[in-house]
Image (cartoon, rainbow, N blue to C red; front, top):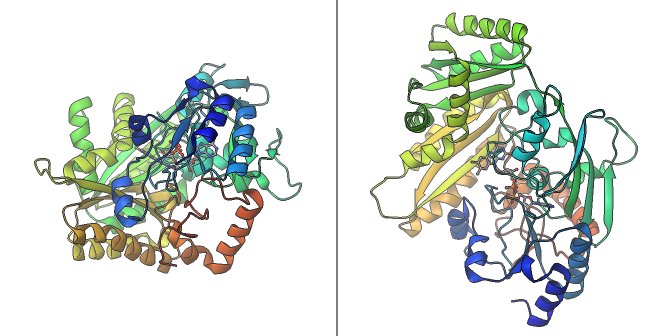
Length: 492
Ligand SMILES: Cc1cc2nc3c(=O)[nH]c(=O)nc-3n(C[C@H](O)[C@H](O)[C@H](O)COP(=O)(O)OP(=O)(O)OC[C@H]3O[C@@H](n4cnc5c(N)ncnc54)[C@H](O)[C@@H]3O)c2cc1C
């Protein structure tokens, strides 16, 4: 609980209209997609904020951080609230900083190809403005949540998605950042030039830091010319191994914009969604399907699409090979972006009144180890008697495993944590990473030492101490200690 006298000080900084401790609002700000599952794993915590504030500028943020240091109040930055790992869940109470009012596009510079924005700008809104300039521009590191997520949240999570194989992650588009560190110091990292090797890369330290080192108040992002066209080629495969081998062949020929895989369960989910929004397209429910998205000028992209089609046609394991029409292309990717929720709709027994928690796991393994990962996964899920679906960025080796777990009994609850640990061990034994794009948050924080070793994590903790010595920023996430210690479980 924050004392009334402190709440009054916060009100003086932020203004009455931009602050709330209404229990209904507090409740809404205390959940994410996975918080039901997380509330079981971390049952020592209550995910409940004391206060929500909506600052309007950097000056207010600096004053709030200074006050938080004086009074030891926890601050939890929050964008659109779409993270999958509990990144913005308040676990020691505290003040949630909602950036929805700081949503101005401050400058678009077509000559230098950069845009300056406040952190609450939606990726979608920036994209819309960039499209209108000249022949059109874009920032192609779109996550699946592109329609709703904020630039601040994308930077703090280093988000990426289906186009990362060709276009990289949010980090690759960031030139410059303004932030208020946990110390209260205002900083500016980076510059307006596209290359620089002067000194340590402090900008990159803030990228992917999940609000634990500083509060981003402004970002400068570079943009690129929009490709003239996009073409998608799809094929079904009766064997996962054959599909992975095909993905290898495609990458020897070209780096496509997207090289995605979806298994039988995910394809059924996508069909459920398509049947409602675009029944003209129905995907063959095979063992797996590959979706290859190409972009560029019309002539070259057309040639590349024909070549991919040929590769598919010459593979005896492939069927239903198709170059999609523009309209089909559009709906295929819409259904791909919604494949997680559509799949969960299928996995969760519709008429069963028991609550179910979705769990989305985000691993990456080296390309050559993907098949071994699939085999181990199938065994593990069988042993746990869990339905699941796999969808992922095959080209990056980044796979999302979606499952639902009944919350009926303690044994079911326990499964969530155990399953995660088993899959993490498997991933690490194959030289992978515990999270390729969704981030650590609460979900993966306890497993950081498995990937970075004790020494690596100790260095991270020291960096945290320099940037936020009083540990006021986002407790419990990544390397941010909470009242219960460094990581949210005692597993380390
Ligand atoms: C349907 C769906 C699909 C998704 N697909 C993808 C995907 O393909 N790839 C991917 O990478 N992710 C994906 N995500 C996860 C998530 O949407 C992205 O990481 C997204 O970029 C988070 O943005 P947000 O605005 O919702 O941030 P939030 O979730 O609100 O916050 C994210 C993190 O940023 C911090 N933060 C927010 N603003 C600031 C700030 N101004 N200063 C400092 N820290 C800040 C928060 O504390 C938190 O740690 C998906 C989520 C959903 C629901």
